[in-house]
Length: 140
Image (cartoon, rainbow, N blue to C red):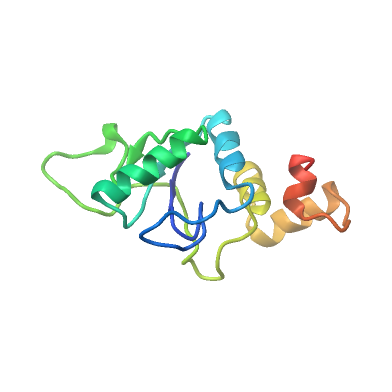
C-alpha cells in the first residue's frame, strides 16, 4: 500500500518553521509499516531547506521515504505535474476527526478495518489497563 504521511502535527508536534517534539510512537509505527512492505511518501507543506531538515530528521530516526512531496517515481507522469500525490491512504492530523493514536493507525492499516472495528480489536487483543494503546502494543 502507498501511504502519504504529513510531517508537522502528525510525526512531530506543531512548531513550524521549527521541528517540534516527536509524537510518541510515530517513527516506531512508520518503521513497522516499512517492515510490512508499505511504501511511504512524506507529504508536507515544507519546502526548500525546511523540507530538507524534515527529511533528515526522519532519516536520523530510521525512516527513509520512497518519495517526498510527489507521487512514487514509477507513478510520475512527466506530462502532468501536480502537488497532489497518488496514495492509497493519507495520514494527517488535519483529517476529519483528528489524528488517531499511532497504535490505532497501525492496527487499522494492518487489519484493513475502519477506526471503530480496529479500536474494538485493540481492546480485545490488549485488555484495558492504565497504559495507553501504544504502550501496550510496543511494550513500553
